[in-house]
Amino acid sequence: MEIIERADYRWHLGGALGALCVSASAVLLGLASTTPATATAARCLFALPVVGALAWLERRRHGALSVRGYLAGVGCGVLFAGDMLWWTQSIREVGAGLSTVLVNTQIALVPLLAWLVDRERVGPRFLWCLPVILAGVVLAGGVFQRGAGGSNPAWGTVHAIAAALCYSGFLFLLRRGGQAGQPMQTYGIVLVSAAVVAIATGPWWHGVDFTPAWSSIGWLVLVTVTGQLLGWLLVAFCSPRLPSDVSSALLLLTPVGAVVLGALVLRERPTPLQLTGCAVVLVASYVATTRPRDP
Image (cartoon, rainbow, N blue to C red; front, top):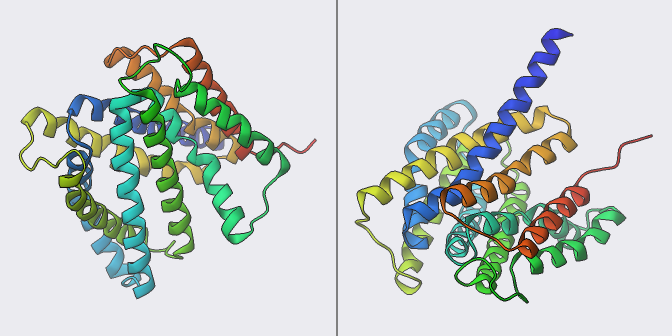
């Protein structure tokens, strides 16, 4: 019994650490002070050596991806690029903390996509929570407030929701691609595709800098290590070993951690209504995506 409890504790700790690592991404991107295309391309390219090595080992053990797998990876890469481009832009406009909370609406968008496209059944409380989440988004974005936090909170909200839609599509397509046994090869294709999209669209949207300052490179390397490698690997490894409600609760540490770090590191000061909106989004998302316990 003691061994099991210690193991469970390690999964809890690993999941929490992974979520907090991911939460640092928005703050580190804010410190990097680069264009969305520059940050997106750099994050993908910096992660490629590690992911490429793991993909090579995976290919030797389990074989190469099918043509369908490659095409699904490219499609996922395009959506992943959209997520990172719009999210990075929203960090400038609404702040690192609030942008991460708004992007967190993908927790509810993925089941909604599955319901609309695949007709997967969703519970009634999920449908009841959707308008509550929308109301929280409006509050968090400061749409009807004067003096709301962020340089352009209304557009920041739009870009964050666009990022959430892209990331939801990425997760949905990834699941439909049917490559569960070859995740690293798929992730490698996703990174290459996303980097190409970022470099191609950069000249028409805020530009792309091929020679960023060394300080920016350092922050982007940290984003890659903490967010795209360590953070998500911990989340992917620990979450399946935890009850779904515990896993969902731990993942809420990502937006909460981003709000706290944004206030401490970037001196972000959301208004009380914006913070209320954040709380509404987080609580409603948690309620919408967890099942009630059996009596």
